[in-house]
Image (tube, rainbow, N blue to C red; front, side, top):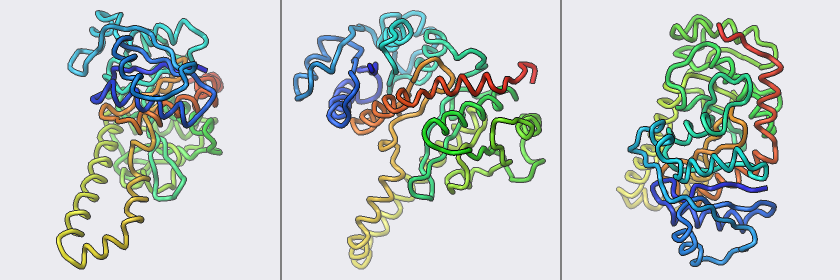
Amino acid sequence: MKILIDAFGGDHSPNEVILGTVNALKEKQGFTAVLVGDEQIIKQQLSNYQYDENRVEIIHAPDVITCEEEPTLAVRRKPESSICVAFKHLKEDDQMNAFVSAGSTGAVLVGATLRLGRIAGVNRPALCPVLPTMIEDKQVYLMDSGANADCKPINICQFALMASAYAEATGVTNPKVALLSNGTEDEKGNMLNHEVFPILKKMKTINFVGNIEARDILTGDYDVVITDGFAGNVALKAMEGTVNTIFSVLKSEIYSTFTGKLGGMLLKKTFKKIKARMDYNNKGGALFVGVNKTVIKAHGSSKNLAIKNAILQAVSYSESNVATKVKERIEAEPIPMGE
């Protein structure tokens, strides 16, 4: 198994990307890391670490697509960028199983769709991060979290199919699927929700349980939450901001008094455990579901821990054949394009 890694994607590349790659190689056997980017710089960075040289390959790519560039134009104008070169090899080489990048989200999504290609029958691929919940060891799959700001009913229905297949491939039995809305009653929601709700209720290969409010996403009562990319991204960023704010306020209040400091010392291990559960670095990245092979989009600010976990995600999802299971689910319940 070979995992392509964008060595020049993200705010802290290439240093943190290469360190994360080395740590992933040390933690798990059975895969080869293929670093894509400026070969000379990659070799210089690798020389700082001890690793199994037989499990590392380098593909030279002299250009980089930045987050400031318009994604579609950048993908077309920079065929020698690390992202485009990686997708070329991912599509053409059967030995390449997955691609991990913390680079431009738009460029990764455009490249995956145009260069790698969609699974047959998929109208629009989507980003699906896996989020922690209030129940330990229970996760929730949020789809879409930003790839498709404007959606049609067919997109939301296919998100339900694809996210259900993804959850099942990673060990969830009969995942409960909920539609993000502004209330739990059947009649709640915007025009898109009103159109898609009755279709979801009739679908035979998903376990649709109705509407969900954003405050219940992390309760652990649901396995899959589906919505358009605009609402999903707003919900995701709001949760990230809330978690960061709570920890900042807690830290400020604890250290404001002597008794608070004593209490903080006693609860230090508990706070660390909670923070570890909520930290995206411990999850890795979001799977771009609906394309022909595994594509993981890591957070742009990812450091070595998040990169390591994104690579391990890529290995795990490739072993689980998530893309194949998504293809089978789409074939099992086709949705007319007119829906």
